Image (cartoon, rainbow, N blue to C red; front, top):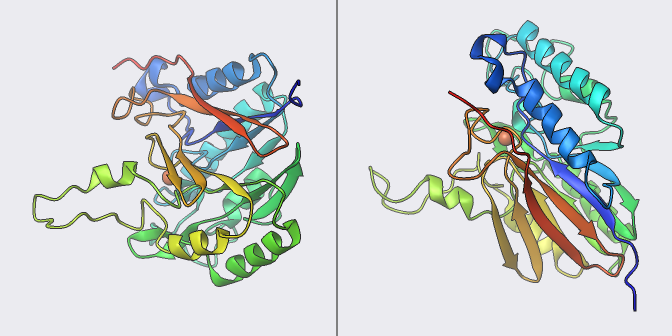
Length: 290
Ligand SMILES: [Fe+2]
């Protein structure tokens, strides 16, 4: 029996694009992002759509308005020029404007998530859609507080999620997308015991603070895959029947080469209507030179 043609998605995350002529041509994030888009769109069988996993730009949390807008301009210029596929975005912490810059007034019209919402053409920071027999849920899990931001979903979003799952029902295969991982082994590597730390400590800037409220909620639904990014490292966890994947970054070590041995790359996922999926990580081949 021939399986149905799968839905093929490229998951490009942590592009960290900025206008950057001072750092030399080999660190040009716009060229590196262009290469990633070309690599994703040159594949056979062809990719059906792209999901961008967040951190589209280098940083708007701390940078000023002008720099933040220039980064978005550069990102959108490359995207509009080189991307021919539909794009579904996830908001990342670095996409958010002004949260860690005390000179930006909180009543600025583009403050916070307003800037990425407008630039990415999103009507809501969280949403869902159906394709290829699957239901895709995009969450917005950067919240204001703690060390500037932390990973969590706010109460209205949790209510929305409960309702969205209820409407989807118990049989449709579901993929949940977040920027900050719900669960991650990579994060554990960052804060090992030692140097004043007695116990393993995984800060809520790396992994969702309220991950338990999601994993509990997922029980009883046909959630197959939770796909995250943010850490620029890769892992794959099987937990309570669900696969949790953290993917590498298009920018790797912020355009200075591989990050902890993870090269510049993106996830390629084939989603089959019966709920199976195949995931692979494809390096873009970008070579950063000091
Ligand atoms: Fe991030």
